[in-house]
Image (cartoon, rainbow, N blue to C red):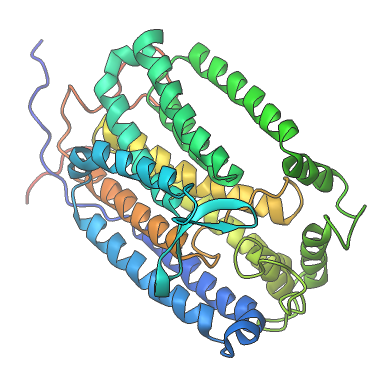
Length: 406
């Protein structure tokens, strides 16, 4: 029987309009909520109710520009820059720890001072850069990924190096997100389930150690378990967040009518903006936001399953997991379902580096989705083995018929 080496006829490009629409809706709603949640603080600090809104709009503009460029740029071209970019981000994450270079905020060093543009956080860029680099590295590994010496050990060393820098920065939130990116990429590439279980156990042990050895992390855990034990002290942010969500009821108090944003709730326009969403739009608004991220995850994983090659599969999984998991962590923090970790809500929270990089990542995801609709399948590289440890190849989109020219 002849081998099916000939590519299928090229199909029309499929643009994932739903993925793009969801992104636009979430970003637009986020900009509206930043305007509402930041007005009191903006007037208090800068004598203008639009200070944070204008900055967020400008940075969203930069992110949209990056998204449009990366939407058009073949994502395979990112591979050649991945190693150098990952090394540069690691260097920046190291430099941010140097006194006089990095900015110290409440004992944490995570940012550079970018002057008029505000703060710049290298670990946010690292989420996208590390996803591209790791997808590139694992795709080149192929069968060696199942080896202990050539697969698990170097993978664990890379993850450990990034987590060590984040722990020195006292950035547990970014550490959790980047760990999710690494684990999802390893899993989707068909890594050994035994190795994955060992890695997860090791990470859990390290997490418990870091939590118990650092007093402020232990205090956060205690506050999470008993937020109303010290409502005016350590539990102030958690209790104010719960009060904001509760006062919103089913339909909310109305856009712009939040009480908690008047300097009652710390970080109302950044990490805890979801509480203001709940107060002003109620259960209806929070449910719609949650549904938006669920649908985004569905479309993202759909793009991964239709990706034209293994590199596209695992890169799309990494990006989708990053955004969906970060949204889940943020909402869990705000609702006191999880301890406070300090991560923004993607697309919605105020934060220049975060929103710009996330939009850039969506551009890569859209490019993968677009190529998935028109890619000519090749027997050797069109593999889809999400979560499979046996490495038996599958052809994504094999059920799709080749288009017949009319």
